[in-house]
Image (cartoon, rainbow, N blue to C red; front, side, top):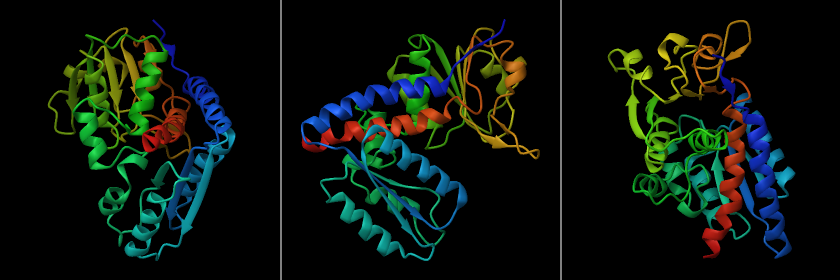
Length: 283
């Protein structure tokens, strides 16, 4: 068996195209969805991520504001900027690029963003809405992973889904999204005894641990759909996921590559949340 490759680049382009049409319709009515991205400090990776997000907004014809603050910016100054953006009718989505400098409380920052503009889906209000089945904004990476499954024709209802990793950014919201689509969900953690026992029973396996190639082909159920959320840089400079792609693709029915799988979907879902957010704010 050779797995069907889930092409995140192609699916992300489809999602972007769908939302560009909606954005164009909104613009014809005088409404331009707007995203503000705040970066604090000089982290090179964060700068690349922010540049990619701003570029993606431009491609969809969305309004975007890139706010770069120095690393010594005070927490109070950052919170004041967020309050200003919360009140700005041109802005429908606010994103603070993490990590922020250590002297700033990231929880306080994320909680300061209006739930109606929280396109990352990290505000406690939106986390609670997701948990109760009344999703407003879902975190972009797990939301994108769900769309990858759906657009690849993977059946979710009634299937056993195993999520390896319990982070607030990926693992927990991924489990909630799968539950909403009627999967039977198991969450595995770093303390799970005999991890392979659970992964081999998964019809859908989502791995988000930050540990290179920790899930191998022998740990995967034949025909399973494997979503690899990890992205790790090896000593030779190459990128790999949390799943050993070479052995896994010989067993799985579907699998995402790294790079080119989940990654492109994260920005696509950010744009979707931004374009969709204006409806919520206009009532």
